[in-house]
Structures are given as structure tokens and as C-alpha cells.
Image (tube, rainbow, N blue to C red; front, side):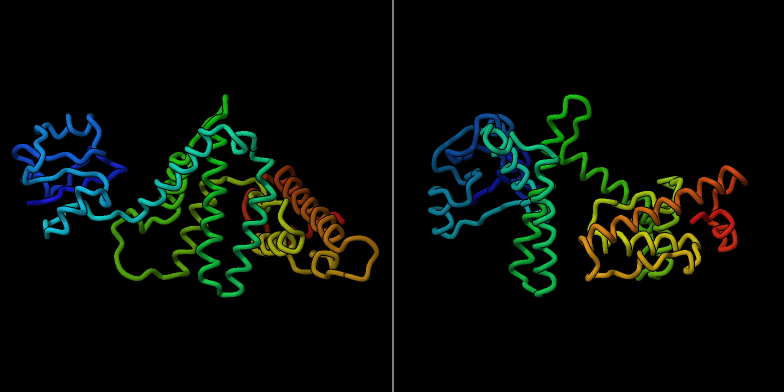
Length: 295
């Protein structure tokens, strides 16, 4: 006497350990759809030795397990609950309510809020809060993916998002596909990642790819770090980018942002001049930066 418990997410997939049990009439749980019954291909007989069910909490399953019958089921797969999250997002969208009125732009403030709340949970070492805020951030990913799915010109869905991520990680982390085993040298790993990223992006400027809409202080740190990696001498970095003056008139945030954008513009202009004058597309030397720099 056995219960074969099918996965509600994949009802057409039978656990390998249950195949030998499906050799005669079975009892189907009421929740098992006709399509699955047809796929199993066995006659329904109430009280048969084997019960095929989808709902682990159904009366038929609990009655049999209470009598000590063995339950045969597929092992849980890590990430299965992500499929539940995708399904919930689809169901919410299907109601045609508030969700379908949103756009990528209208969700910007929620994405920003959830990111800061996640950072707060990390700062406070709040484990429960961290779990909750990661879920809220995941909701934003699902929401934006669902909106994108409706695009009339360039649609994509959450599977496309995941596929793009897997492809990027595989390309930038060769140890995922080259048979490498054992610990990695972190410096070599970082170098391989940066080399793959550079080849993949083929960027015109050392500042390409920086999110210019991020807060001014984070933007300043990123621009200064990128320019240093590109060989820009420290003396070309203006004080207005490295020093925040809170007592000055106006918004310190706005003031710093303006200074960073001016600095970024000078970096790009120097790169353009170098490429136009000498065809330089490699990393500039400090002397070359100074030669093409205009204040």
C-alpha cells in the first residue's frame, strides 16, 4: 500500500522510484486532473493498493499515511518556490487591477525604497528583516519582468531575465564550464571577470556602464574609482568631487552631482581627443591623460 505524490508544479512528471509501482489499477485523488490520469494511463479503482495524488494534505492522503502507508515523492528542488512566486505574480496580473496600471517608471520609487530597506536590514544584522526585504526586492524583479512581457515591440519574461543572467555568469566565470574544481584564487578570478567584461562590453569610455542616477556620493566614488583604474592621475581629480561641503548654499547632494557630472564630462572629452588624435583605444598613461586634459 503506497501513496505516489506528484508535484503540483509538474503533475505530468512521475518520480522514478514510483514507476515500478504503476503497473495496475490505481486510485486517483480527486484533485488529479484528467490530463494527468490519461498520461499515467492506468484505470481508476477506489481502494487500489496505490494512490496517485497531488495534494499532500488531502483527506485521502492523510487517511493512508495515518495507516502507515509509504509515501513516494520526488525530492524537493531548490528554487521551486521561485516558481510559486512567478505564479502569484501572474495571478495578480490576471486580475487586471492596480498591477496592470504600473510601468517601469512608476515602480522606480518602490525599487529604490526596497533597496534602502534591504541595506538597513544588512546594517542592523536583522535576519528576519533581511529575508523579508530580499523577498520585496524579488517582487520588483518579477513585477518589472511581467510588465516587460506585455511590450508590443520588445517583450521578454522572467525566464529571459534568468537566462541572460546565467549566460553572463558563465561567460565571466570560466570555472563554471571549464571543469575547474577546488578553491579559486580570488585575484585571478577577479582578473578573469574584468577581462571577460571588457571583451563583452567593448566600451568606448572607462565610465561606460556607471549608473548616473545613483546618489551623488556613490556616483562620485564610482567615477573616481573607474578613472583611477583607467590611469587618471590623482591630481586631475578636483576637490569639488572629493570634498562635500554641507555649509555651502543649496543642496550638498545637487552640488556634488553637478561637480561629478562636469568631471565625468572632462574624462570622456579627454578619451575622445586621445582617440581622435592618436587612435588610442587602450588604457591611457598618466602623461597621456595630462596631454589630453582640458580644465
